[in-house]
Image 1: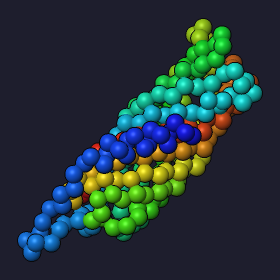
Image 2 (image 1 turned 180 degrees about the vertical axis):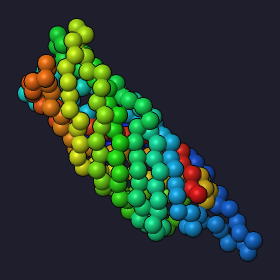
Image 3 (image 1 turned 45 degrees about the vertical axis):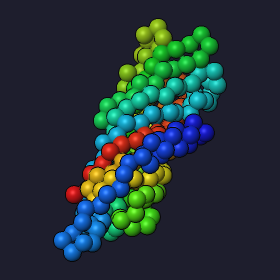
Length: 210
C-alpha cells in the first residue's frame, strides 16, 4: 500500500503545477464550468497486484505493469457523478519467484459512483468513488511457455483522487484505485489454486468537461 500512496503524492506534486485561469463571462464573473455535465479523462497508470497474490505458493508473486486508461463521467450534480472507467490496453505482469517465472496480462474496467468535494470553481477538487470492476485476463504462460488459466477477477473498486483545474474546461488528475478480486488458477482444465490479486492502480491524466 505504501508504494501506491507515495506514487499518488508524487503525481499530486506535479499536477499542482497546473495554473488556474477560469474564463470570464461578459459581466466579469468567472465561468467555473458548473453547468458542464460530462467529463472525459485520458491517463496512464501502474497496476500493482498483491506481492503474495498466490497465497498457496508464497514464493510466487506478480509484478506491476503500466497501461493507458480512459474514463467518461456524467455529473448528476456539481458533487455527484457516475463514471465508466477502463484500461485501453492490457498490463503485463511478470510472475516472479526463485526458480520460477512466466507472465499474465490484465485489462480492468468498471463503473463507479463518485462524490466530488467542494464546488467546481475550486483550484483543487478531491473526490472519492465506490463501484464494481472486473478484468480481462489473457496470455497466461509459465517460464517454459506452458499455458495455465486464470478466471476473471471481479469485485468492489474504491477510488480516491483529486482534479486540478487549469480552466473551466481543462484539468489534470491524480488518483489511486483499489480493486478487490480473486481468480481461480487452472491447469489442463483443473483448478490447482487461487490468486487473490487485489491490485492497486496509481495514475495521472488530463481531462476535459463538456
